[in-house]
Length: 107
Image (cartoon, rainbow, N blue to C red; front, side):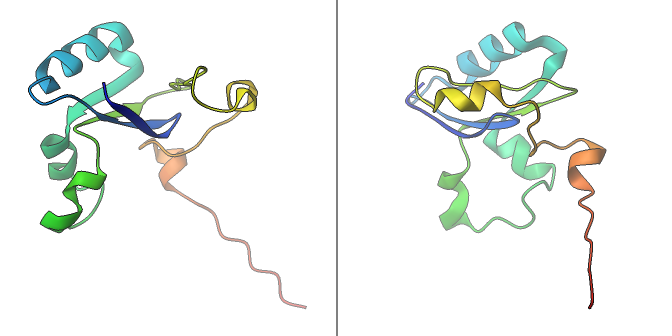
């Protein structure tokens, strides 16, 4: 892997040329049912990102890891240590994370 991006609930893995299949297989085996591990084209085809212009595809990792349940992928060596101690994360595709409440207060 060259670059780990995104946030703990959805990670974008930018990998070495030709390594996508190996990375998908390895991350899938390690994470099991704790995450969906998809190639970029599969993630785009799900519609998660809406229409993606060709020029923007490179912003999405070669591999997308979308955590399920209460799982998260924390990069303890490269991110601030406080990130690993948070009690809640957001950003995946669960129903609760995709339904964002809006509260309007008028005075």
